[in-house]
Amino acid sequence: MRVLVIDDDYLSRMLLYDILSQSGYEVSVGEDGRDGLKKAKAERPALVITDVLMPGMDGFQFLREIRRDSELWDVPVIFYSGTYIDKKDEELAQELGVSRFLTKPKEPSEILAVIEEVLKEKDSGILPPSPIKPIEEPTFLRLYNERLVSKLKGKVTESEYARAFLDSIMEGIGDGVVVIDRQYTILHANTAAASSLGLEKSELIRRKCYELIHRRDAPCEGPQVICPMRIVFGKGETTKVVHTHRDTSGNEQYIEITASPIKDGSGRIIAMAETYRNIMEKQADDDLMKLVKELNDARARLRQMAITDELTGLRNRRYIMERLEEEFQRARRTGRPLSLIMLDIDHFKAVNDTYGHMFGDAVLRTVASRIRDCLRKHDLVGRVGGEEFLVVSPESDVQDAIIVAERIRRVVQSKAIAEGNLEVNVTLSAGVTALSEQDKSPDSVFSRADTALYMAKQEGRNRVRAVNP
Image 1 (cartoon, one colour):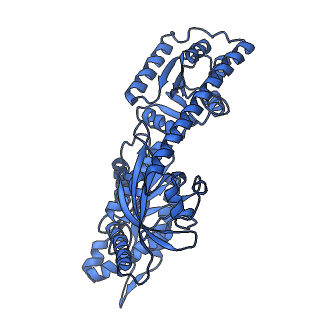
Image 2 (spheres, rainbow, N blue to C red):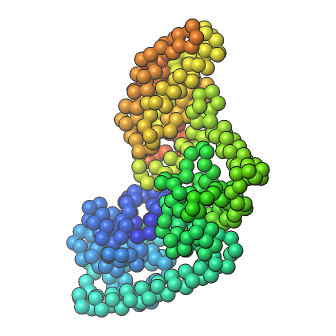
Image 3 (tube, rainbow, N blue to C red):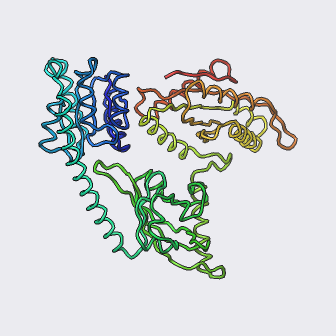
């Protein structure tokens, strides 16, 4: 059963998407009333949940258009909004034929209970029994404009109060404070943060943190970079790191950062607050400065070691399984495809028994290198067992993954592997599968890829086999 969710706020849309899709509903989303109306006409949903105050076409206008449509007039519409629904709003919405009102935030169980109740009423013929007589245009415009002005005044007043309150708190903190969203955009900053960079506070807002703070053209990523974003947004934890910032003159400053998650009313992490202080001036001949740098370097090396397979240089099992979990959750949330490739070197035990484990290690390193060279930029690979490798392929369906697996298989067998005076030809087998709507955890996808690999082995090795979800 399809439910259409309409909200101009991305987090609200995705939260409802997750709640409904995990409860077995087919869910489509609209970014505002116009987008939602277009999708409603194309998809004929069983029910619509919409925000009220949205740009372009808001909830009232959307509801009126739905009730005037000869094919959609009986589709139940639930208003799910913040604090902008008052008594007169309710009266206008009821005249237009709204089914229910929900005030944000609501527990998932409450949202699902209301949806089930409304759908039962529709099936029983209670809601609505017949097309609702549309409000005359002049009357609707008058009532609608009155409600719109009221809501906008309320929202402006509330926003201004919240902003002033937040600014007073941030300015009262002696240390520099910045608030950064998932796209690395600085949403708020205080004067202390701006001064430490030699900038005005207004110059920080809506700019990328890596551009202003680190003088980079891209996000601070990679094993040699200590950035709190992954810990805060990935694990929801507060973390403390020592980082280097550059001022407008290009001078390095060592900064102690405390980064914490900022959550909305539903507990979803929407931004990160960084509080930092300059712990020392950059001094090339300062022993303490050198010690801090060495500690930073050591932490980066330790992190790299913790996620790397020592023999092959690929990511280790723990890391690739964590990334599989992340990509699985991302694919479930967005509806985008995700594929897995399990790879296993054929008759590897015979290589070890015949040539020794030192040569076997050389074979593993060479095969790992060839696998890595065959992958696309967004593919992830790790060693998950003795001679087994896992490739996680976001944004890829089964056919895409089969092409990658075949390329790896051909490249591995195309040239003998030599080490000293020894040389051997090796092949590998591959199992391919993709995420399905029935998969409740990454374990089920991983198990299916392993089954496909077993089939390839049973059928003679040196081949790719796929198990469709």
